[in-house]
Image: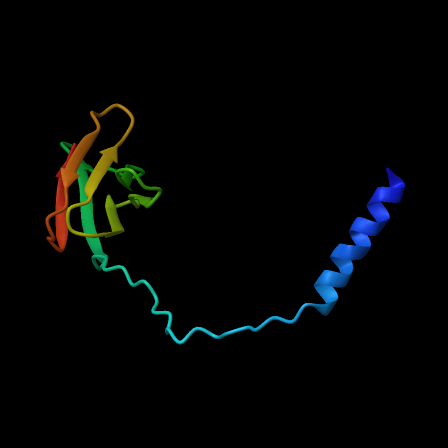
Length: 110
């Protein structure tokens, strides 16, 4: 087996070294693929219940990891785009889903 391998490898090596080839550059210019996406905006809001502001409520854009938690006064700021579904949840309350329609601020009552 070794006797057969040497002549074959020698032949492949010589073919690779002594072959002349021509390399051509492409005349076409590569254009980048640019996708059009919606611009994100900052949505400000407040989460309240019948007793006042709710601190620590979870606000998340559905299907993403983009989210935040309300502060001590129930306020939050979240980066969203039109058409996103915002999920609001807090222990002891039913989870709410609200479709964002482009309004600059919202008030959520749990």
